[in-house]
Amino acid sequence: MSLPTKLMVVVNLFFIVFLVSSYLSLYISPVKFWPLAFAGLAYPVILLCNLFFVLFWIVFLKKYFILSIITILLGFNQLKTYIKFTGAQHKLSFENSINVMSYNVRLFDLYNWRNESGKTTRLEIFNLIHSESPDILCIQDYYSGAGKHADFADSISQQSGYKYRNVELFDKKTNALPFGLAIFSRYPIISTKKLEFPNSRVNFCQSCDVMIGKDTIRIMNLHFESVKFGKEDYDFVNEITVVPAGNENIKKGSLAIFGKMKRAFIKRAVQSDVVAEFIRNSPYPVILTGDFNDTPVSYSYRQIANELDDTFVDEGKGLGQTHSQMLPMLRIDYIFHSKALQTIEHKTINKDYSDHFPIVARFMIRD
Image (cartoon, rainbow, N blue to C red):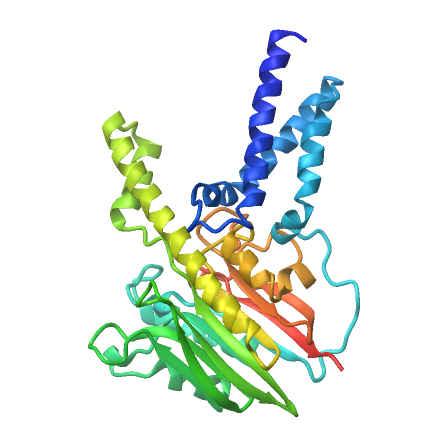
């Protein structure tokens, strides 16, 4: 074996170990060993590197391509959570189905991120909801509008015809910004619960039991811990891509971002454990929606996927990207369901009114 070949084999083995590490991130909590969470986040890049080596060895007629092929196939289930080459293979009537939308609305553009007038974006979001007309609407990063002498829940309910709703704010007792989570329903809501997380004041999960005909379905809506990048973090990334920074500045900026990501991974692991336990104790079938702030190759995703099925994996098609301002492989918003329900449609609506795309799933209740 020549020296260049040996070096390429070593590099190939490095990326194989890295890919295996990303698989392990699904099973080992960041609370116990957080470095694996970064490998899980990097899964798409590591996968592409291994695919490169498959082609590289085939071109040079070397048998080493088998190493990466086997490793990729070991994680085939993870690949399906990122990309689907085929959608629904069956034709079912939408009659008597349940249509659910999940949407992180980014506080209805309260701070004019997208538009000089947040009101313009808010109206676009309201109109989108009305045009889709989901039976159940779950909103993350909800802003009540109370500080502006308005109630956006009234606007949504009146425009789209929702008789029932449950709005949970992160703190109702203070004068803090009135934001949180909201569920709107065409079906009667018979009970509600706010599931708080032990490591966060602003992140939580809401639960509503709704009556659909003779069936009771538990609707859960959550928002897991975000990385909380500040303006200084985005400025750092923008600066180093345009102007080479000094070693000390690179080190300082990188450590700040790394630290925030590490803390978020650990917090989300605890939060997902709490939600998984709540699902296990549910007396009713569950539909869960939410902004996980985590990719499908992550511990928090697997904790929920152990209990429920992912509608994108069921009936999605393509890459499934849900964050409008980042990498095309970034899917961090989900709709899950119990096996008592069958997914008959999953779609992503590519409208950039928020930094998240809304996702919609349609269900049938199994007999």
